[in-house]
Image (tube, rainbow, N blue to C red; front, side, top):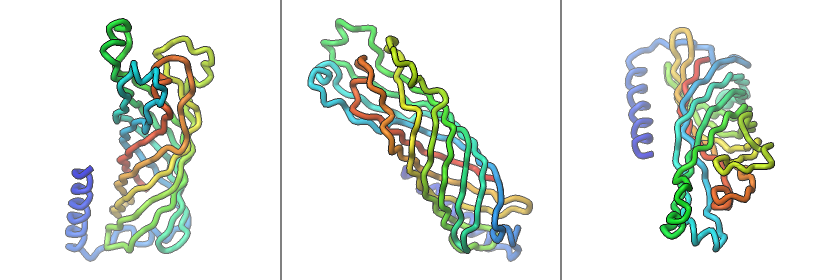
Amino acid sequence: MKRLVLFIVALSSLSLSLQGQTRASNLGSFDNRKLHWGIQVGYTRSKFDLHFSENDTLRQNIQGVTSYYCPGFHINVIGDLRLGDHLNLRLLPGITLISRDISYSWSEAYTSTHWKYDLRRTVESVYAEVPLELKFRAKRYTNFRPYLITGGSWGFDVASLFKNKNNNDESIIRLNQIDLRYTAGVGFDFFLRYVKFAIEFKMAFGLTDLKVQDDDFYTQSTKDLHSRTFMLSFTFE
């Protein structure tokens, strides 16, 4: 995270330095449009925000459960509505492909008799998402403008095994199909000659408990499962 902050600061400083060397402004009336369209592609890293089970029997056999960030990808269509000089409303329907790892720490006594139990499981999801965000734009400086974004997202996991009600396969960790998330981040607009290009850094925090209760130890080891995703995005408008 420290490296990310330093990168953002360095990028901003470099952009301001370069823009200060020219008086020309590209796409001078672009942000005055009432409605415009674009596309966004990006890289994601996702994990579960989870809490260890409070069941005493499980705690005797499982010493801990941890989730790790895993890479993914997303692509969205942008519909941008101008609400004012410094405020826009954005709708970004799209697809997000993510995977999340869960690591299990079994007790030595338990693994001696249950050696087949895995130490790590990967859960994959393919979300059809409809994010709705507010974009707070700072004052434009020649061909550069920073902005803040906040909003929410509704996602439907088309790859979910939620309907597998008779889950006898312990390798499957079922998740609820619907995920509601709160999003917040920062971005930088660069007005090029023919297109507006932007770089965004955003975090999404799941508000929905994704856990589906099953009888296996893998599922019961956690009290709840919430999504957490970091997104690095590139937009073209």
